[in-house]
Image 1 (cartoon, one colour):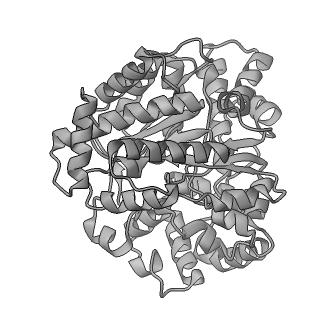
Image 2: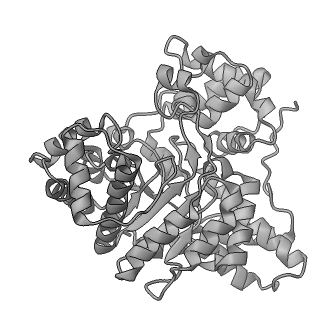
Length: 469
């Protein structure tokens, strides 16, 4: 493969209108990354990133999957006995074969934006790129990498029992980027798990009292919600990968189920659904009370490869798209909360592309005058976080809702080098609008379209989340 990069000035931009919209309206806007899995600890410690291998391959299951598909031995992917350089060289071997996969675009956008590297990553260029990138990273802390990309705010993903000590440490330092926690409530829902009792013990330890009843549990949850709120939290999240059901329940039924679990008894599927239905509703009302935005990531089927799960653990890169029915769950949950005027601002993300219209139309059922675009169908997520997936999401949202009020892109990433994904999204957005102008489908009004692009890229999210300035 020729070594010269294809990431040109007008990469993705196919029309003059698209070029104007991107370069004059979108390109220089700051970034608000309201959902990611970055490490607050690494930001707080403020140490230079050790190598591009650490930044790119540690925890990046997108790359792991590609390397496995290329036949790379696991020791060069997640192994502990191989060097950073050996792993990088195996990734470099894989990259040419990722053509048509978003990893090909992301990899070369990142090389160009962070390191000024225009070469295609492949075996013949790998050694030089490894040395050049590492020379840059040896001088760059995570906070500096974020500032280089003009990232104003990031929202990390945090368990309810997290001490948030690193968020506090970050706040004491004069970083350009504000780092806010997100209340990721998944562990609270695993009442059917053998580890739930252990988690309750952990919860009890951080709140300072034992969880011996449902009332204790609610008090403990409220305690952590307030703790997160005091530390600047603006969002919650949920991402359990399985079929979800909302059922009718009484308070007494929930107490019986919870007490049964406390006594180490097995729960039926019906009993699990009773508890989860209660918890979805309870948390939803608390999020509304706190004026948070609630997020629901729905649709993965997780941990398919049990062998790798045992060897590596969770997030091993063996999750995929599920085909669970989702519409009834969303309808019942949002309707329950809306019935008492306690439905918070909400973003949903689907993983199954066949459900695009399902999600887009469901969110439209519960819009109101609380704010513009209160109910958001979120950007292309995970396996849909690529050019085709984003184009379909943009066009479907335009068909079924109001694209103009969309809060835009997020990285959902574990890498401090992932922020050119915002550039990627902005270029794609501008190209979609530019193509519509070329086809005579929308007015050739650059000022109007430019404002729309700026809102979707930055200003809508700033208003929607009420981020600190």
